[in-house]
Image (cartoon, rainbow, N blue to C red):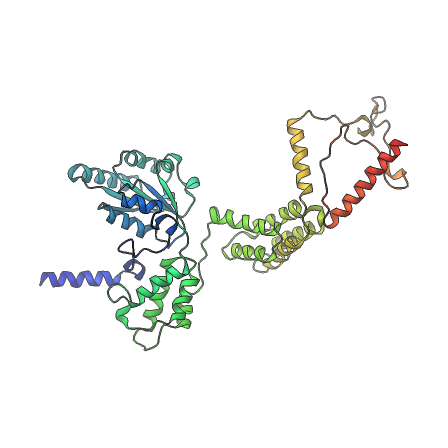
Length: 441
């Protein structure tokens, strides 16, 4: 009887677990995704087959299998699996797990896989606590983080660990997991005998952005919501179950910098559609619109420049409009400015000019201001020779005179032959050519 009650309690506990937890892969063959390092012949698979797993750091977005793979590693290596969440644990809990791992190793030779989720949430001192036991092999550390470990973790820990970057799981692979969950009567949703249509599964596999956990959670909501009604889990039910998707975006981490880089490079590359997409993604994720406005203003000056001087006017106007009206309406001038900058002819001649001039100022001899350009508006300036020989440009019929304004031969600004800058280039060539003719005469 006791065994029967134990089985019933175990079944109730298992049923209470979310579908995503129940459907965790039980072996490497059930694991989906990450074939770039776990496929046949790939590094992590070779390490597992050779039983030579060292400490590893799993880096990537949520729902891509970091926890599941850590559990599989422990099972495959016949190690004890210990788990901590860095957001809810401190040095005390960490030392307790390390001491327990040492005791298991010394008493029975049993190895321990210590899985630390959200490892980046440990501060430097907490991360340092791990180092001696990781180095001595007391534990095999599997750290999981959604942030770039080269920024979020201490260097000694990174240097002692193999880093594996997890990618969003492909929709076709997620579809396989969803089909398995819908039909599995022991771990999945098969016991509810609810029809799940193909288009519903395909929709969930595609909309979840590579997050298996999110897809399974939406499937569970959909099936349970119609269970007993005779209604299938069709596309409409699936769409209602997923609701608005939460965009993976860390305003201070990789997503922020990568999306901003994509926006800038799309405008520079004259692709207005890509620029609008990255702008929309960042806005939807809650990015500060003033940050976006600043990036567009910079792109207008750096990448368009004098090829279309109006670009900076439009971008600056958008920045002012965002300050004035805020969101959601502020998205409209931001979109207008991003599209204008993307479609404008491109020149970075002004950007290169100031860079070259600053380099000369920092690394070369500082040039004195030529005497004829020095200020001559104060008493005694004439006695010092300041301003002597200066020619006022407007006294010439053309509004230009051939005059030295730097004291040395330097060319910093080299306009390109695109947009309005082509006109600037033509004019400069005419002026410089005219000057050379006058000197020759």
